[in-house]
Length: 186
Image 1 (tube, rainbow, N blue to C red):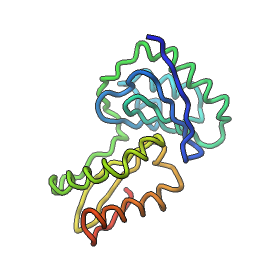
Image 2: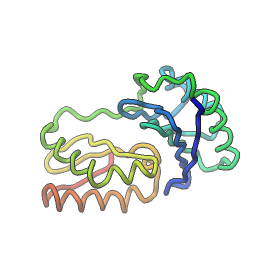
Image 3: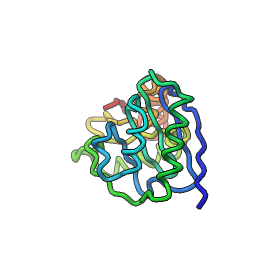
């Protein structure tokens, strides 16, 4: 297969989305914060090793979001990451199972039925836009009408995630789920 890589900017000035014409993760998502976490994923390790300014990688479906510390030149960094992807993707296993310590697990105290309702609303309203921008969110818990979420990928360090996006999530859930819900980032 001829690997193709398309680079897309995100609303986060420190993150770029690298879209490829093959899967990078077939089931679920994973976030890496350092090369040492990538034992299960040689492709991720190679991307980290391409530039010391990379601070996070997010794998989802057919894209990888690369977040840097803000001090690297994007033109140079894009070429380095693209070169690694073109070289390593033919041997990459998108069915890898991550044991990354940075994976946030949902808390066990939540009502699964209620979380399923909330996830269904978010799947229809919020997640498509977040994924289009190289990120996503994970619902962690619902306790005493307080919903805890965790941003992933480009959304994790995006300035608008803490304000505008969080308010949009809250307003949609107030409208479609229940009027007394609060949403907090974890």
